[in-house]
Structures are given as structure tokens and as C-alpha cells.
Image (cartoon, rainbow, N blue to C red; front, top):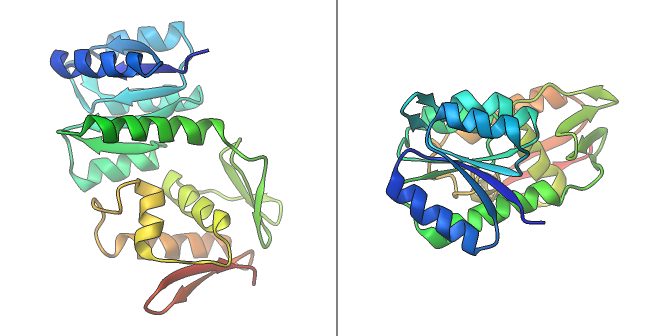
Length: 220
């Protein structure tokens, strides 16, 4: 069965071209030009991925996030709005990727494929010291207790768990979180999120700063 994509975009030219490209790639695409029609489509069918514009005639793509994530739909923002505040808001809301216009079609198609692959390739559980991550649930636990993490903190933890005992450069980490080599992120943003994650993990696992190289996660 073809993977189903909800595409919400008010620019008719972009919508027509990208819908055609997605369908040629084998995806089943439902197009919506505004919030109202997107919510109608959401209520009537199940989707694997939603591609959302931010600025829409009757609202914002952010208005659709909670309903879609509650249904387990992966999110990719495709928008001309490239300020850092909106980008962080998107990822903290659960977005898998954020692509700004103008975009290269080949790159966008690769990002769509990657988002769907992440959705379909979830392991049962992953562990690091006393920390356990359940990708299928999108949850993490420390010593059996649920960790209250933002979407970005969760993705950061997942990156460390998938690469435990390895030194990761800042660029490697940012590419896993934002899938864009960190080009939308100020220099101190990663440092802030790592500090927050360390505070929440406590003694359950260790995230070590390797001077001049990056970070390494390991058991205490």
C-alpha cells in the first residue's frame, strides 16, 4: 500500500508541481489549500506524513500540529518562514523536518523519504545506562520513571542513545536533530539543550563534553 501524505499549501503552482512529483514517486497525496480543508481531510483519512505550510489563508500550519501528532502522523514543514523562533516551535511541537522555500526538489524528496523511513523503522527499545528509550511510543524512561522531555530533547537523547560511547561533533548532533547541519541554530542553542537534558537525566546516564571534539554519552 502506498504511503499517504497530506499536503497543505496555498500556492497553487508549488502544490501542483510537488503533488505531481510525490505521486510519481509512488505516494498517495491528499491536497488541502487551507486549514479548513486540511481538517476535513484529517478527519476522513489516516496519513503517514503531513507536509505543512506555515502561512495559510485561514490560519497557520501550527494549528494542525496537535491533531496530526495525536494521530501519529509525521510532520514536515515546507514554508518561506525561516526565522529561528518558528523553526524551534516546529521541532518542539514534534516536527520531523523543516524546509524553507525556495527548495530543491531532489533534496525535499529525500527529506520526505527520510521522515517516512524514521516513522516505519522504529526499534522496540534502546538503552543507555539506566535510561530506556521506546521509539514506538516516543517516550524515554530513567530508572523506570517517565522523562518529561520536549521533542528536541527527545531527539537529542535518541541521537546519543543510538551512538553511545562514541564522540559526536556538534555538527553531527545538529544534523540528526534538524537534518540541516544546524544552519538554523545559534551557536549556544545545542549547549543549552544538552544542559537541560543532563539535568533531566541526572545520574541515569552521562553526557560528557570532549574538549575540542564534541560530546559522548555513556553509563556513569
